[in-house]
Length: 306
Image (tube, rainbow, N blue to C red; front, side, top):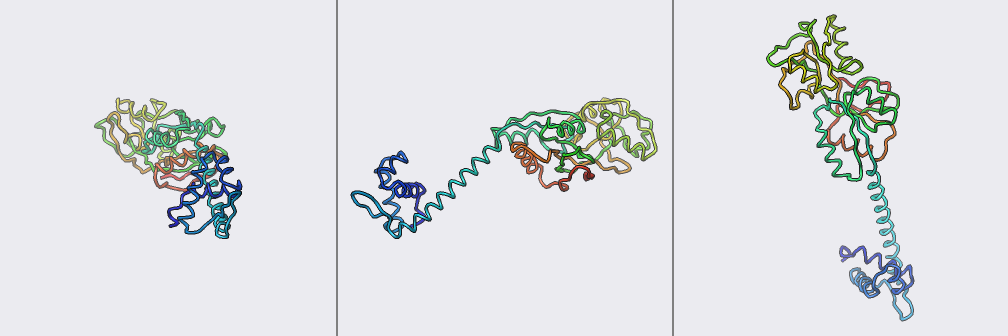
């Protein structure tokens, strides 16, 4: 029956017709002539028709063979196209991707995500750089990075797009045993924060201005985990992304911010034009993070805040 027809039978049959005989087809395919003859006969048996009229000098197509040849060539052409597309897909995941990341990952298990991508695309070399999101976004716009992972702030650089991946929220972090409360109650107390120019520092300064109180930063850390470490040591209090304090680390008190204040969602920044390898990693990150909290937005627009 037709379901038993094999691809090699179609290949051998088409070669016999194209080459004008079994001997030439065997030479073209570098297959023994007896093997080609046997497979073509098996094909005819499966179809229940004679495809080739054989003589001692040459072979010619029967009427059924002419009809079948057209179909066979279509199948072989489609297969060749499919192989070409598969080869192109394989090629797009070769190369290198430079990724910038902040300490705010929105609960994304970045090592596991990258390990999964590397296993799926071993032809891609990955490099990581850590820093503040604004500086990393600038490097992205300059072409020094391919992707940046971090909080999505309004007004990304020109040519940079943002895909939100997960929500995050702002929390008040205190030394262990310290009660929370309204932020106005912490006026004048030492705060721990990221340096000037960071999104978190801008957020804290905005809170102080909105509330009309002094929330002085007495200690700075270069990364969110460092902020947590200093708070745990009793040097002050801080506001930061909940995803940071949900990770393993030194014990701290975690409280809701009063009044409630939004924190930018976590997302991936990229240029409008990505290399095939960067696009593959971008797609992998989206799939790993699950349903996004909002649509991709473009330069000059305000990123979603949760």
